[in-house]
Amino acid sequence: MFTKRVVMRYPTKLVDKPIVSKLVKDYNLDFNILKASVTPNEEGLLVLELIGDRKNYTKAMEYLKSLHVTIQPFKHDITRNEKRCTHCGACITACPSEALVVDTKTKKILFNEKKCIACELCIPICPVRAMEMHY
Amino acid sequence: MSKTIQEINEKIKKGQAVIVTAEEMIDIVAQKGEKHAAQEVDVVTTGTFGPMCSSGMYVNLGHSKPRIKIGGGTCYLNDVPAYCGFAAVDIYLGCTQTPDFDPRNTDYPGDFRYGGGHVIEEFVAGKDIKLVATAYGTDCYPRKKLETMINIKDVNEAVLFNPRNAYQNYNVAVNPSDKVLYTYMGTLRPKFGNANYCSAGQLSPLMNDPFYKTIGIGTRIFLGGGIGYVAWNGTQHNPGVKRKENGIPVVPAATLALIGDLKQMKPEWLVGASFLGYGATLTVGVGIPIPILNEEIAKYTAVKDEDIFAPIVDYSENYPKVIPGNFGEVSYAQLRSGKITVQGKEVPTASLSSYSKAREIAETLKDWIQKKEFLLTDPVANLPGADSGTTFKFIQERPIKNGD
Ligand code: SF4
Ligand code: SF4
Image (cartoon, rainbow over the protein chains, first blue to last red):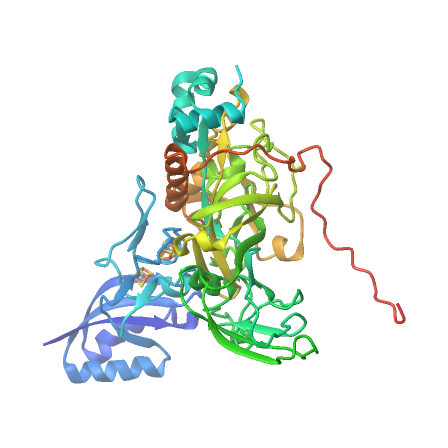
């Protein structure tokens, strides 16, 4: 058995298409949806845990790429440059997974890495570019 | 009972003055009433920390040997063009300026990763900056090219001079259209995806002195982590707008032009910023002390987020096309709750100005005054007030005639 967590982003026109059920039917993959949302550009965003055969997984990824779905491995590789962050809060509404929230008492913006799905949406939104992606 | 600024300064010097932040003043007035609060409290400190595009610095570089007249020539600081239409080595760098090679919005939405604001931040931080200047050469200023590293500690003057800062209230930006908008109010998601606002509300300087009774030309302030002064009213100063009963304008109103010695400022309070698809700018920290001269001023400084309202403006149509109208008003308390209702839809809110940093500025200013490092000033002249007739106009376009 092979398990992989991926972040999928797909164009608007695919939002209503049953892509995930095709992964089950045609490629015999099992899945858990870790996160599903729509980005500011109205793109679909899906974080999936895929379970199945490695060969089938590779084929499924090729199928998705042919549909212009971008696929990234899911890892916690977003950090916040604490020295740069001004705690403005501009990033809060960009974050689809509530990894960035206001502390109601201190009014500081808290970054919870555990909740971050590394979608990168906050990176260009942050005016001082405090959110950083590490490859 | 009323006090004068001189009396308050005497108390500061003796270490007897009572200084509180605008947040603390809310509770004091609620518990003790305006009258007692006015007797007890001498100074209320305010703060704001947000992107302020009309900001920049002027620098006198010092003369080169042989001399160069950069005035009328060209000048770049870390590839960002500076204005040099002054004397030989005086230049001005605005925070929204970007390098000539920046693709800007031809690569939509532009990233605006580096601009004048970032140069200012690095310069204040003491980093070396690359200077490239050209000149046409004169008998007294023969040199035509200058390429050197410069540092803030070596230049003659480095002065932050911002034509418009510290807006008294501002719009809440929303996007009812179907496409994402990249604005100076941040990225606005379609169909009311988010509502962005930009004010420190109850902590903001001009919210605590709505009729400019104490803040005027010459007022000493916290600017960029150092000491600065109110130089003038800011551009687009618009004091004659509609106000609530508490005196707070319900739309953007007064503004301030601020000045101060950049050499004593700190990069934590002058931070270069990039607005996707809009441009580069500078996040500026401003804090203003308000002397509690009487009950009326005590009452003003106790203003709460619940009592300050901002208009919800459509940035897809109304703002760009200058069409009057808005989606109603919301209070800053509602905005800070994280969501508001617009046209029956629940919309998440995001702030562009940092409330926690505004609080830190008010605390810092309080600390300076307590340590007797900072005394209050009487304004030299008042700012144009609500009845001054000063308004904010749009340009009247007229055809350019040939031969004119
Ligand atoms: S937008 Fe950037 S600076 Fe503002 S709170 Fe988020 S990470 Fe910090
Ligand atoms: S990358 Fe940024 S926006 Fe995306 S989940 Fe992580 S914190 Fe939120």
